[in-house]
Image 1: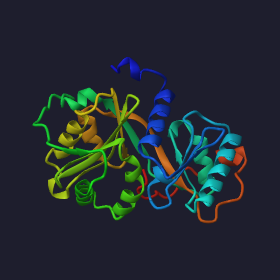
Image 2: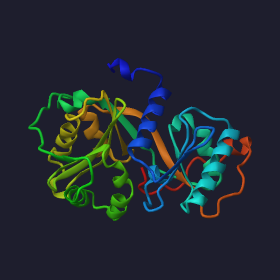
Image 3: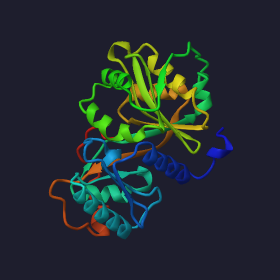
Length: 287
């Protein structure tokens, strides 16, 4: 059972987690519209939706509210010279928006699963009674050269330098950058009773040996906030199984959607939105 601090409606939890993510993974430019859309832009960091896509409020909206939000997102993206994108979150409350975007020819990205767990339970390594030797971590409040080297080796991203110069620089002093030499690396951010886990990665030569489990346990053993969340692509069956075995459970899903290069100048009416196709190409990594 969740602690009292975590009780509340489903939308309250979604809103709290999304608000935490906006602060924990800071974009270079952020604005909030009167309708509650959070507009984000990090022009130096391509391919990360949470750095560059507008975030809708958790609560369902009317078609007119969707129209205003999309207009604001398009203007904001144009001003910061980034592709126009929207994070539809949670999906089950914003199906009409997905139908509108599909009807306009937007690319609808793969669903991302937000999973949550009791921090203390995972940190103690007691989710299934599989306590193991605690992994020794080096932890700093900034992305040091050693941490970047470890993460680069484990994750093998092509945009490591862009992360270092943009979002990681803004996370300094708030986040905890943890690594076990070049074997595993990750980031945790604790704010207002919630911990977010980001960039969890294990070296290719170390995978399938339980190191990912030990990394998450060791990272969370350092935190006191009761709730932890992380994000994983729905297709990542191995990752979801690992997190489930640690005590994480599915909380909600979202997806990133990107406008076509020549975006339609107006939204379809409500009737057209209801009959729009429900599927489109899967976007690349951008959670």
